[in-house]
Amino acid sequence: MANMSSSVCMETPHTHGHAHSYTPTTGRDFSLQMDSCMNPVLDYSAQMERYRSFANFYKNGAAPFPQAAKIARLATPIFPSPMTPWSCDNGMLWGRKPPAVNVNVNVNVNGAHAHAHAHRTAMPRAEPLNVHMPSKMSADNFLSPLSQVGGAECMNRLKVPPQSSGSGGGGGAGEAERGGATFGGFALPPGVIVMTTLHSGAGSSVATMTDSAFQIAADCQHSSSASCSGSNASTNATVSANSSCSGGAAKRKRKRCGVCAPCRRLINCGVCSSCRNRKTGHQICKFRKCEELKKKPGSTVERASSVGAADTFRWFF
DNA sequence: GCGAACGTGACT
DNA sequence: AGTCACGTTCGC
Ligand SMILES: [Zn+2]
Ligand SMILES: [Zn+2]
Image 1: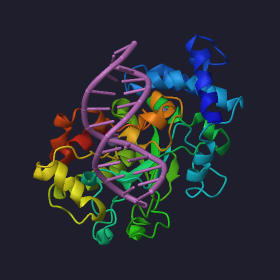
Image 2 (image 1 turned 45 degrees about the horizontal axis):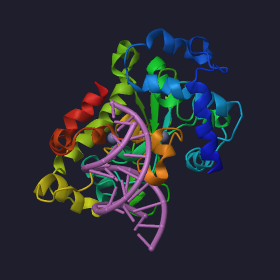
Image 3 (image 1 turned 180 degrees about the horizontal axis):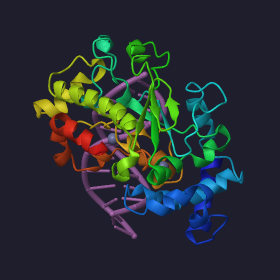
Image 4 (image 1 turned 120 degrees about the vertical axis):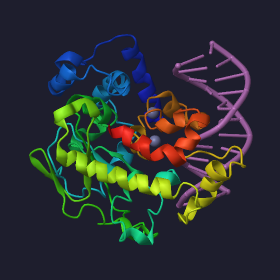
């Protein structure tokens, strides 16, 4: 409550144009971004700009970041050590989080077949977890992922093993990239994939592409094969069957795709209308709202089950 | 049963 | 189009 209100209050000064210390064009680590990122990578950039001011506020310690606790809780299991595993300033590690995701891209996550297709079955669930320097984590929380990626176009996604969630998660554990990969100059720890934005052109190295491509390919397979098979994806066979296959059941809740940028965000911004209005609004943070779910159900239903694969690819290309 | 979040309609 | 509120679904 208190936190919440404080964050709400923050909105006023910025909205009225007070500059604070926010100087977008001179930001030390935004030079790159400002240089080449004006092209619309994601329309998040604009919105992120807006929220950057909030970040600065929290960064300056003017008030505790509303979700600092949550961040800490989420970050800990991934990198117990106080060190950031790599030094990509514009990178972002993606940790996994439990919430259910669209079956279509998530099939057999629990699969006993984890060995058979030992690829990124776990990834679709991955959600963003900012692991920049722990100290600035809270501050950069809701701005680094999408705004900075626009500049350096470097997103690292970490597939975290279904941490101890014994529930059949075992398969996902080390299943992914056991060997690890290299990205640019630094090595990626096993379980990490790198995403890049399309227009980066030469920027997207083979290493990055291969890894993500593999990831997506895996998703696609699952997507198509599970489209209407009433898969034994344990939990939600019912849902998928109802909503996208039988076509009979009218209004089943759609599920987040789990692979789009918003889906992979891990924490709520705390300042958007949805966050502020969570009590009564019952809506997910606007920055976490699945791109697919934003679309009209009519235009998305099929995509989820059949076109999903291609669409997923389009996300990268 | 509870919390998260989707669907929807009313309102601005 | 964005916000708000409510009902509802869904996973745990
Ligand atoms: Zn939010
Ligand atoms: Zn999504």
